[in-house]
Length: 187
Image (cartoon, rainbow, N blue to C red; front, top):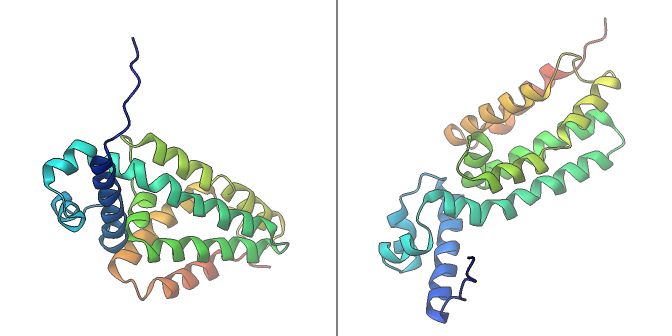
């Protein structure tokens, strides 16, 4: 027998929203590994209240990141609308890593496997579904190395996540060196 869940009391709903806002801010500032106690403190609630609403860290990621990952759809659509295949591909990379540099939590989400957060994984897959098309277009136009694959893109994303974490002011330089190495060379 399935029972309908009752709506939260007004004070409980306020506490839940305060926790979500605090977690979103702290994840963006410091990444997914921020201590849960810091989230409770910023939300001005007890740690018990935090665990009542969000028993696991994955509950926070599931509540916050599918919406944030929708930005990937926007940058993908922008890139697909660009008629220049190389510019579209390189522009997509620039926009993707700009998002990651601006939000350390999003950076962590895109660099990690999150098997306990299937909604987040699904949002990542939806948001990156256009990457194959961008790669194919650039290869067929003769502007991207013919051996570049989606697996290479996944490796680059994990590498860029680390560069962004370690050298937040240097990631653009690293990306420009990498992207230049991906250009197809004419004999």
